[in-house]
Image 1: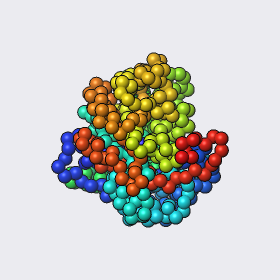
Image 2: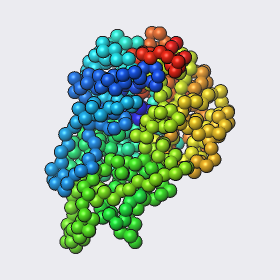
Image 3: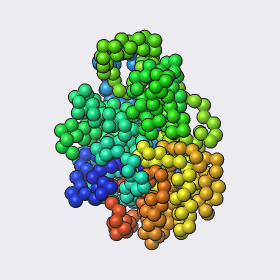
Image 4: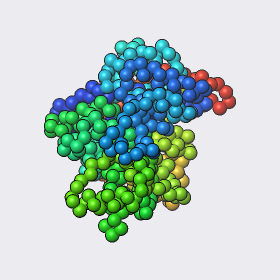
Length: 234
Length: 277
């Protein structure tokens, strides 16, 4: 899940910005077991985690070995070009868990995350639980739920040949899948298509989400970024 | 990865899908081709594009007629209409590319999917990074630039001079021939991967020295490096690390927080000693 650590935002601009915009719609909570430590009855533990998450309307959930709520299909027919079903399938994610993996859930608001973490505390599932979000927001969540933080890991940004990277808007989208499965070129293409009114921001976000293999792509945030970029309001 | 020229209709949908831009339309062939040297075997094109299984002859005929009239069909951008993308059987050393690029393949050395690292995600039950210590995850190639092991070795060699320990349970460390000098096995140095994570541990006092060395080395390598730094919090949940990082001029806005809700539920001969602490 290092893949959620380096999600690009204004705070990681290569030239420091005077007033970086806060990220208030991207909160990931994930669960990971350790081999021979707490991986007994593992599938049920992971399923319990995701079932609890579903009570709080996450924008995505995922299993790192299978994918998120939206996935590619191997059996499309040409009608798909005019009428594409983009229904998310959380039940398939939960039922598909088979063993060692990481399961994750993405929320687009702080309150939902807090309620979920509160539920997790009571449920006492036993596997390691992490929040991947702005550090101060995660700290606030711990305070609000009476949890003492165990460990923290800071993203300190990108170094090296940053001249090879795409622009900030594209990076914000493509780094939502830190494994790099949402390519920068595809994110750029989706920006262009939205600007040309060939697709809606929602459709463009759904296309990209299908490439994220662990379900941490934030559809709400992607839609919002695409919407703002359409009018050059970013 | 290969593209079957008998099936490909040169719709070019797969070109922007490739995370490293390794696919192009060959002008002589009139079909998509994969630049084998650039391809990192991430399987994104094969796995994540939806498929239609249409007849290529029919699709080419339709495209030709439409092209004569300059009609532009507006297909779904994530579909390979003829299922033309075909994985190859990978052998050593090329197989290393897939291990480090396809997150759905678990790393043999750690059994973990993705980039194969646990970092502090399970620190509440493994106690890998203790109070007063710092764990570094130094990722090469992310996002979407890719890296060769030669670049990674440049940095691991430079880090080996400092007072650090390479994490044993890490996919890159498992490919080292000399951990004390940060040397990676020669036969994979030219292999190109989407990303790899080097993990080291050191004392908190050493953090500034490691950061400065990383800053120097990032000017030498031909890829992007993204860095995460972790520590275990004090009993009241506070941590001294954020302040150190800010003093060194690094952003600390985003991160991961281990909530400490994990617990040991197995106890047997295989349970790591650290987990019982």
